[in-house]
Length: 406
Image 1 (cartoon, rainbow, N blue to C red):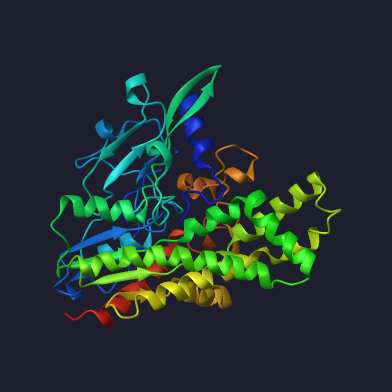
Image 2: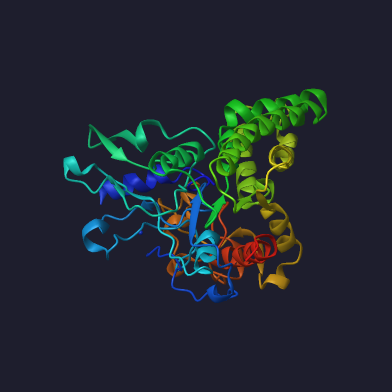
Protein backbone atom coordinates (compact mmCIF):
# COMPACT_ATOMS: atom_id res chain seq x y z
CA UNK A 1 0.00 0.00 0.00
CA UNK A 2 1.03 3.59 0.04
CA UNK A 3 4.34 3.97 1.79
CA UNK A 4 2.82 5.71 4.75
CA UNK A 5 -0.88 6.22 4.19
CA UNK A 6 -0.80 10.03 4.47
CA UNK A 7 2.40 11.08 2.72
CA UNK A 8 4.91 11.03 5.56
CA UNK A 9 7.91 9.88 3.55
CA UNK A 10 8.67 13.36 2.26
CA UNK A 11 8.73 14.72 5.80
CA UNK A 12 10.79 11.75 6.92
CA UNK A 13 13.41 12.28 4.25
CA UNK A 14 13.55 15.98 5.09
CA UNK A 15 14.07 15.12 8.76
CA UNK A 16 17.00 12.91 7.78
CA UNK A 17 18.47 15.74 5.73
CA UNK A 18 18.22 18.21 8.61
CA UNK A 19 19.75 16.11 11.34
CA UNK A 20 14.60 5.50 12.60
CA UNK A 21 14.86 -0.11 14.21
CA UNK A 22 15.97 -3.12 12.30
CA UNK A 23 13.95 -4.61 9.48
CA UNK A 24 15.14 -8.17 9.21
CA UNK A 25 13.14 -10.80 7.45
CA UNK A 26 11.71 -12.47 10.53
CA UNK A 27 11.68 -9.33 12.66
CA UNK A 28 13.28 -11.19 15.54
CA UNK A 29 10.08 -13.13 16.20
CA UNK A 30 9.62 -16.87 16.17
CA UNK A 31 7.01 -17.82 13.63
CA UNK A 32 4.71 -20.72 14.38
CA UNK A 33 4.34 -22.15 10.89
CA UNK A 34 3.87 -25.74 9.88
CA UNK A 35 7.67 -25.97 9.59
CA UNK A 36 9.62 -25.92 6.39
CA UNK A 37 10.15 -29.69 6.59
CA UNK A 38 6.44 -30.08 5.99
CA UNK A 39 6.33 -27.51 3.20
CA UNK A 40 5.93 -28.40 -0.43
CA UNK A 41 9.18 -29.89 -1.65
CA UNK A 42 8.87 -28.30 -5.08
CA UNK A 43 9.17 -24.73 -3.74
CA UNK A 44 12.83 -23.72 -3.84
CA UNK A 45 12.51 -19.94 -4.10
CA UNK A 46 10.03 -17.23 -3.14
CA UNK A 47 9.65 -14.20 -5.42
CA UNK A 48 7.58 -11.19 -4.37
CA UNK A 49 6.03 -8.24 -6.18
CA UNK A 50 3.72 -5.53 -4.88
CA UNK A 51 3.52 -2.63 -2.45
CA UNK A 52 4.33 -1.91 1.20
CA UNK A 53 2.19 -4.79 2.44
CA UNK A 54 4.68 -7.12 0.72
CA UNK A 55 7.87 -5.04 1.11
CA UNK A 56 10.39 -6.59 3.54
CA UNK A 57 12.62 -3.52 3.69
CA UNK A 58 13.27 -1.39 0.62
CA UNK A 59 13.48 1.92 2.45
CA UNK A 60 16.21 2.99 4.86
CA UNK A 61 15.23 6.30 6.49
CA UNK A 62 18.23 6.35 8.84
CA UNK A 63 21.46 8.30 8.40
CA UNK A 64 23.58 5.17 8.82
CA UNK A 65 25.23 3.75 5.72
CA UNK A 66 23.95 0.20 5.83
CA UNK A 67 26.14 -0.68 2.88
CA UNK A 68 29.25 -0.49 5.05
CA UNK A 69 27.76 -1.00 8.50
CA UNK A 70 25.51 -3.93 7.68
CA UNK A 71 26.28 -7.63 7.51
CA UNK A 72 26.97 -9.55 4.32
CA UNK A 73 24.75 -9.40 2.34
CA UNK A 74 24.07 -5.72 3.07
CA UNK A 75 21.26 -5.06 5.51
CA UNK A 76 17.80 -4.25 4.18
CA UNK A 77 15.83 -1.21 5.21
CA UNK A 78 12.68 -1.20 7.31
CA UNK A 79 9.27 -2.79 6.94
CA UNK A 80 5.94 -0.96 7.18
CA UNK A 81 4.79 -2.53 10.43
CA UNK A 82 5.54 -2.57 14.14
CA UNK A 83 9.10 -3.57 14.88
CA UNK A 84 10.57 -6.02 15.54
CA UNK A 85 8.35 -7.31 12.77
CA UNK A 86 7.97 -8.21 9.13
CA UNK A 87 5.30 -8.45 6.43
CA UNK A 88 3.35 -11.63 5.74
CA UNK A 89 5.47 -12.38 2.70
CA UNK A 90 8.52 -12.78 4.91
CA UNK A 91 6.78 -15.27 7.17
CA UNK A 92 5.50 -17.28 4.22
CA UNK A 93 9.06 -17.43 2.86
CA UNK A 94 10.35 -18.56 6.25
CA UNK A 95 7.96 -21.46 6.06
CA UNK A 96 10.13 -22.69 3.19
CA UNK A 97 13.40 -21.89 5.01
CA UNK A 98 13.87 -18.96 2.65
CA UNK A 99 15.20 -15.68 4.04
CA UNK A 100 13.48 -12.97 2.01
CA UNK A 101 15.57 -9.94 1.05
CA UNK A 102 14.56 -6.84 -0.91
CA UNK A 103 15.80 -6.48 -4.45
CA UNK A 104 17.11 -3.03 -3.65
CA UNK A 105 17.45 -0.67 -0.74
CA UNK A 106 16.76 3.05 -0.94
CA UNK A 107 18.67 5.22 1.54
CA UNK A 108 16.90 8.52 2.12
CA UNK A 109 18.62 11.90 2.11
CA UNK A 110 21.02 14.01 0.09
CA UNK A 111 22.69 11.95 -2.64
CA UNK A 112 26.11 10.52 -1.91
CA UNK A 113 27.54 12.83 -4.59
CA UNK A 114 26.75 15.71 -2.23
CA UNK A 115 28.04 13.97 0.87
CA UNK A 116 24.70 12.58 2.00
CA UNK A 117 23.43 9.03 2.51
CA UNK A 118 20.89 9.13 -0.32
CA UNK A 119 21.36 6.29 -2.78
CA UNK A 120 19.76 3.23 -4.31
CA UNK A 121 21.65 0.03 -3.54
CA UNK A 122 20.97 -3.17 -5.47
CA UNK A 123 20.87 -6.01 -2.94
CA UNK A 124 19.75 -8.64 -5.41
CA UNK A 125 17.04 -10.15 -3.23
CA UNK A 126 13.86 -11.68 -4.60
CA UNK A 127 11.40 -9.28 -2.96
CA UNK A 128 10.82 -6.63 -5.62
CA UNK A 129 7.86 -5.07 -3.77
CA UNK A 130 8.21 -1.42 -2.82
CA UNK A 131 6.22 0.77 -0.49
CA UNK A 132 4.12 3.25 -2.43
CA UNK A 133 3.99 1.12 -5.57
CA UNK A 134 0.99 1.58 -7.83
CA UNK A 135 0.04 -0.86 -10.56
CA UNK A 136 1.88 0.79 -13.44
CA UNK A 137 3.21 4.28 -12.62
CA UNK A 138 6.62 4.81 -11.00
CA UNK A 139 7.55 7.70 -8.74
CA UNK A 140 8.76 10.66 -10.81
CA UNK A 141 12.52 10.98 -11.22
CA UNK A 142 13.36 7.78 -9.42
CA UNK A 143 12.06 9.26 -6.20
CA UNK A 144 14.55 12.15 -6.26
CA UNK A 145 12.84 15.47 -5.54
CA UNK A 146 14.09 19.00 -5.10
CA UNK A 147 13.65 20.54 -1.69
CA UNK A 148 14.70 23.85 -0.13
CA UNK A 149 17.06 23.85 2.84
CA UNK A 150 18.43 27.10 4.26
CA UNK A 151 17.42 28.92 1.10
CA UNK A 152 19.10 26.46 -1.22
CA UNK A 153 17.43 23.99 -3.56
CA UNK A 154 18.93 20.53 -3.22
CA UNK A 155 17.96 17.06 -4.49
CA UNK A 156 16.67 14.57 -1.99
CA UNK A 157 16.36 10.82 -2.44
CA UNK A 158 12.91 9.68 -1.37
CA UNK A 159 10.78 6.62 -2.08
CA UNK A 160 11.37 5.13 -5.52
CA UNK A 161 7.96 3.38 -5.45
CA UNK A 162 8.60 1.27 -8.53
CA UNK A 163 5.28 0.08 -9.93
CA UNK A 164 4.20 -3.55 -10.05
CA UNK A 165 4.74 -3.38 -13.81
CA UNK A 166 8.31 -2.11 -13.43
CA UNK A 167 9.04 -4.69 -10.75
CA UNK A 168 8.03 -7.50 -13.09
CA UNK A 169 9.91 -5.80 -15.94
CA UNK A 170 13.03 -5.73 -13.76
CA UNK A 171 12.75 -9.40 -12.90
CA UNK A 172 12.09 -10.55 -16.46
CA UNK A 173 14.83 -8.28 -17.76
CA UNK A 174 17.39 -10.26 -15.79
CA UNK A 175 15.80 -13.72 -15.86
CA UNK A 176 14.64 -16.03 -18.61
CA UNK A 177 11.28 -16.32 -16.89
CA UNK A 178 9.67 -18.07 -13.95
CA UNK A 179 9.73 -21.79 -13.16
CA UNK A 180 7.74 -24.47 -11.39
CA UNK A 181 10.03 -24.42 -8.34
CA UNK A 182 9.16 -20.84 -7.42
CA UNK A 183 6.38 -19.48 -5.26
CA UNK A 184 5.36 -16.03 -6.47
CA UNK A 185 3.54 -13.74 -4.03
CA UNK A 186 1.98 -10.56 -5.40
CA UNK A 187 -0.45 -7.78 -4.54
CA UNK A 188 -1.23 -4.33 -5.89
CA UNK A 189 -3.84 -1.69 -6.50
CA UNK A 190 -4.25 -0.29 -3.01
CA UNK A 191 -2.04 2.72 -3.65
CA UNK A 192 -3.95 3.60 -6.80
CA UNK A 193 -7.07 3.77 -4.63
CA UNK A 194 -5.35 5.59 -1.77
CA UNK A 195 -3.81 8.15 -4.11
CA UNK A 196 -7.20 8.91 -5.63
CA UNK A 197 -8.86 9.60 -2.30
CA UNK A 198 -5.90 11.47 -0.84
CA UNK A 199 -6.31 13.98 -3.65
CA UNK A 200 -9.42 15.22 -1.88
CA UNK A 201 -9.83 18.61 -3.55
CA UNK A 202 -9.72 17.21 -7.06
CA UNK A 203 -11.46 13.89 -6.56
CA UNK A 204 -13.42 13.57 -3.33
CA UNK A 205 -15.04 16.98 -3.00
CA UNK A 206 -16.69 16.71 -6.46
CA UNK A 207 -18.11 13.33 -5.40
CA UNK A 208 -19.52 14.86 -2.23
CA UNK A 209 -20.92 17.75 -4.24
CA UNK A 210 -22.69 15.27 -6.48
CA UNK A 211 -24.19 13.53 -3.46
CA UNK A 212 -25.33 16.83 -1.94
CA UNK A 213 -26.81 18.05 -5.21
CA UNK A 214 -28.67 14.88 -6.15
CA UNK A 215 -29.37 13.52 -2.66
CA UNK A 216 -28.11 10.23 -4.04
CA UNK A 217 -24.93 8.16 -4.04
CA UNK A 218 -25.67 6.70 -7.46
CA UNK A 219 -23.49 8.92 -9.63
CA UNK A 220 -20.62 9.07 -7.14
CA UNK A 221 -20.63 5.31 -6.68
CA UNK A 222 -20.71 4.75 -10.44
CA UNK A 223 -17.70 7.02 -10.81
CA UNK A 224 -15.49 5.25 -8.27
CA UNK A 225 -16.66 1.86 -9.50
CA UNK A 226 -15.55 2.67 -13.04
CA UNK A 227 -12.17 3.86 -11.79
CA UNK A 228 -11.74 0.75 -9.67
CA UNK A 229 -12.47 -1.48 -12.65
CA UNK A 230 -10.04 0.41 -14.89
CA UNK A 231 -7.25 0.03 -12.35
CA UNK A 232 -8.12 -3.64 -11.95
CA UNK A 233 -7.82 -4.22 -15.69
CA UNK A 234 -4.27 -2.88 -15.52
CA UNK A 235 -3.50 -5.22 -12.62
CA UNK A 236 -4.94 -8.20 -14.46
CA UNK A 237 -2.54 -7.49 -17.31
CA UNK A 238 0.37 -7.65 -14.87
CA UNK A 239 -0.90 -10.79 -13.15
CA UNK A 240 -1.26 -12.59 -16.45
CA UNK A 241 2.41 -11.97 -17.20
CA UNK A 242 3.32 -14.37 -14.39
CA UNK A 243 1.79 -17.63 -15.69
CA UNK A 244 2.56 -16.51 -19.23
CA UNK A 245 6.19 -16.27 -18.12
CA UNK A 246 6.24 -19.78 -16.69
CA UNK A 247 5.10 -19.26 -13.10
CA UNK A 248 2.97 -22.16 -11.89
CA UNK A 249 2.65 -21.29 -8.19
CA UNK A 250 1.26 -17.77 -7.89
CA UNK A 251 -0.60 -16.35 -4.90
CA UNK A 252 -2.32 -13.00 -5.40
CA UNK A 253 -3.58 -11.15 -2.32
CA UNK A 254 -6.51 -8.88 -3.09
CA UNK A 255 -7.00 -5.39 -1.64
CA UNK A 256 -8.31 -5.18 1.93
CA UNK A 257 -11.22 -2.78 2.41
CA UNK A 258 -9.46 0.56 2.85
CA UNK A 259 -12.84 2.01 3.79
CA UNK A 260 -12.63 -0.06 6.99
CA UNK A 261 -9.15 1.14 7.97
CA UNK A 262 -8.18 4.10 10.17
CA UNK A 263 -7.31 5.92 6.93
CA UNK A 264 -11.00 6.37 6.12
CA UNK A 265 -11.78 8.02 9.44
CA UNK A 266 -8.71 10.22 9.28
CA UNK A 267 -9.63 11.32 5.76
CA UNK A 268 -13.12 12.22 6.95
CA UNK A 269 -11.63 14.43 9.66
CA UNK A 270 -9.28 16.12 7.21
CA UNK A 271 -12.03 16.80 4.67
CA UNK A 272 -14.35 18.12 7.38
CA UNK A 273 -11.69 20.54 8.57
CA UNK A 274 -11.04 21.65 5.01
CA UNK A 275 -14.71 22.22 4.27
CA UNK A 276 -15.13 24.24 7.43
CA UNK A 277 -12.18 26.38 6.43
CA UNK A 278 -13.24 26.93 2.82
CA UNK A 279 -16.98 27.45 3.00
CA UNK A 280 -17.99 23.90 2.28
CA UNK A 281 -20.41 24.05 5.18
CA UNK A 282 -22.45 26.68 3.39
CA UNK A 283 -22.67 24.42 0.35
CA UNK A 284 -24.20 21.66 2.43
CA UNK A 285 -21.27 19.30 1.94
CA UNK A 286 -20.55 18.48 5.58
CA UNK A 287 -23.33 15.88 5.91
CA UNK A 288 -21.96 14.04 2.88
CA UNK A 289 -18.57 13.39 4.48
CA UNK A 290 -20.13 10.40 6.22
CA UNK A 291 -20.15 8.64 2.84
CA UNK A 292 -16.39 8.78 2.30
CA UNK A 293 -15.79 5.25 3.70
CA UNK A 294 -18.69 3.97 1.59
CA UNK A 295 -17.13 5.38 -1.58
CA UNK A 296 -13.72 3.93 -0.72
CA UNK A 297 -15.28 0.54 -0.11
CA UNK A 298 -17.15 0.76 -3.41
CA UNK A 299 -13.92 1.32 -5.32
CA UNK A 300 -12.14 -1.51 -3.48
CA UNK A 301 -15.06 -3.86 -4.13
CA UNK A 302 -15.17 -3.01 -7.83
CA UNK A 303 -11.42 -3.47 -8.08
CA UNK A 304 -11.41 -6.85 -6.36
CA UNK A 305 -14.35 -8.16 -8.36
CA UNK A 306 -12.82 -7.07 -11.66
CA UNK A 307 -9.46 -8.66 -10.88
CA UNK A 308 -11.16 -11.88 -9.78
CA UNK A 309 -13.05 -12.05 -13.06
CA UNK A 310 -9.93 -11.25 -15.06
CA UNK A 311 -7.84 -14.08 -13.63
CA UNK A 312 -10.62 -16.63 -13.21
CA UNK A 313 -9.39 -18.67 -16.16
CA UNK A 314 -5.81 -18.82 -14.86
CA UNK A 315 -4.31 -21.01 -12.15
CA UNK A 316 -3.44 -18.00 -10.01
CA UNK A 317 -4.46 -18.59 -6.39
CA UNK A 318 -6.32 -15.62 -4.91
CA UNK A 319 -5.92 -15.06 -1.20
CA UNK A 320 -8.87 -13.05 0.07
CA UNK A 321 -7.10 -10.53 2.30
CA UNK A 322 -10.29 -8.46 2.31
CA UNK A 323 -12.27 -11.33 3.84
CA UNK A 324 -9.56 -11.87 6.46
CA UNK A 325 -9.71 -8.19 7.44
CA UNK A 326 -13.46 -8.39 7.88
CA UNK A 327 -13.14 -11.58 9.91
CA UNK A 328 -10.64 -10.04 12.32
CA UNK A 329 -12.71 -6.89 12.70
CA UNK A 330 -15.88 -8.90 13.30
CA UNK A 331 -14.31 -11.04 16.02
CA UNK A 332 -11.15 -9.40 17.39
CA UNK A 333 -10.86 -11.61 20.48
CA UNK A 334 -10.70 -14.71 18.30
CA UNK A 335 -7.42 -13.38 16.93
CA UNK A 336 -6.11 -12.01 20.22
CA UNK A 337 -6.90 -8.40 19.29
CA UNK A 338 -8.27 -5.64 21.52
CA UNK A 339 -8.26 -2.83 18.94
CA UNK A 340 -9.13 -3.17 15.25
CA UNK A 341 -9.91 0.45 14.38
CA UNK A 342 -7.04 2.75 15.40
CA UNK A 343 -3.24 2.81 14.97
CA UNK A 344 -0.92 1.13 17.45
CA UNK A 345 1.90 3.51 16.59
CA UNK A 346 2.45 7.18 17.31
CA UNK A 347 5.61 7.34 15.20
CA UNK A 348 5.13 10.71 13.54
CA UNK A 349 7.99 12.12 11.52
CA UNK A 350 6.89 15.55 12.74
CA UNK A 351 5.82 15.39 16.37
CA UNK A 352 2.24 16.50 16.86
CA UNK A 353 1.36 16.22 13.17
CA UNK A 354 -0.85 13.14 12.67
CA UNK A 355 -0.56 13.44 8.89
CA UNK A 356 3.06 12.26 9.23
CA UNK A 357 2.29 9.04 11.08
CA UNK A 358 4.13 6.12 9.49
CA UNK A 359 4.74 2.57 10.63
CA UNK A 360 8.05 2.60 8.73
CA UNK A 361 9.76 3.94 11.86
CA UNK A 362 7.46 2.35 14.44
CA UNK A 363 9.19 0.49 17.27
CA UNK A 364 8.22 -0.78 20.70
CA UNK A 365 9.10 2.69 22.00
CA UNK A 366 6.55 4.40 19.75
CA UNK A 367 3.47 2.31 20.57
CA UNK A 368 0.45 4.02 22.11
CA UNK A 369 -0.51 3.15 25.66
CA UNK A 370 -1.90 -0.36 25.92
CA UNK A 371 -0.81 -1.39 22.45
CA UNK A 372 1.49 -4.27 21.59
CA UNK A 373 2.63 -5.55 18.24
CA UNK A 374 -0.01 -8.26 18.41
CA UNK A 375 -3.10 -6.88 20.17
CA UNK A 376 -3.75 -4.07 17.66
CA UNK A 377 -4.73 -4.76 14.05
CA UNK A 378 -3.30 -1.59 12.51
CA UNK A 379 0.19 -0.18 12.96
CA UNK A 380 -0.68 3.13 11.27
CA UNK A 381 -3.59 4.27 9.11
CA UNK A 382 -3.38 1.36 6.67
CA UNK A 383 -0.61 -1.08 7.54
CA UNK A 384 -1.07 -4.15 9.76
CA UNK A 385 0.91 -4.78 12.91
CA UNK A 386 3.44 -7.59 13.07
CA UNK A 387 0.87 -9.78 14.81
CA UNK A 388 -1.66 -9.15 12.06
CA UNK A 389 0.93 -10.01 9.41
CA UNK A 390 1.54 -13.33 11.17
CA UNK A 391 -2.18 -14.09 11.08
CA UNK A 392 -2.18 -13.23 7.38
CA UNK A 393 0.82 -15.46 6.71
CA UNK A 394 -0.66 -18.44 8.54
CA UNK A 395 -3.83 -18.19 6.46
CA UNK A 396 -1.85 -17.96 3.22
CA UNK A 397 0.31 -20.95 4.15
CA UNK A 398 -2.78 -23.03 4.81
CA UNK A 399 -4.22 -22.06 1.43
CA UNK A 400 -0.95 -22.82 -0.34
CA UNK A 401 -0.71 -26.25 1.25
CA UNK A 402 -4.26 -27.00 0.17
CA UNK A 403 -3.72 -25.73 -3.38
CA UNK A 404 -0.16 -26.50 -4.45
CA UNK A 405 0.74 -30.19 -4.78
CA UNK A 406 3.76 -31.51 -2.96
